[in-house]
Length: 166
Image (cartoon, rainbow, N blue to C red; front, top):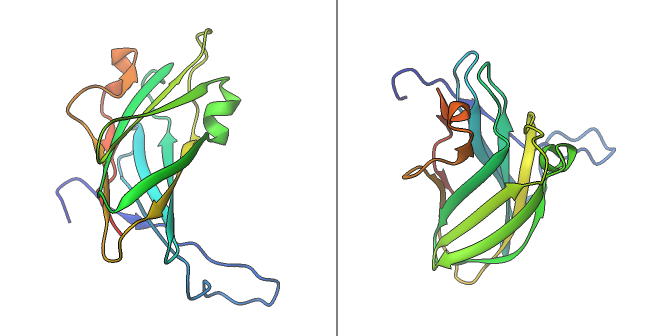
């Protein structure tokens, strides 16, 4: 465990009406929410089948100013091919539109913005659906080599979730 971080594993539990607490055998879900009381958080969760991965970008508002614009880049194994994307409920509630780009192989760029100054609230920012074009493990990670939120104050104390190994 890294210093200053505690992790809570987010598990997907299928509720099929039978009271079963185990997910279907072909579906697994993982995700790690970073810790930090009062800090804004950005992390990924994933649901995986043998042929696809659904990646959810999640945000939790902290005590600092919330972002009005997001420019998030996610690195992924080249065995994953982006099939489609959609704005999440948190982005839609703030009136944001999602633009998805692939500036280079293995990187997806998500831009969330609107013409107004509404801040993003806690919730799902986006869902990305990937097809697997090769068997074997894959990895996804939020790239942090440049700011992901504007205004700059919304980056203060931002806690980022660890990469996901699928």
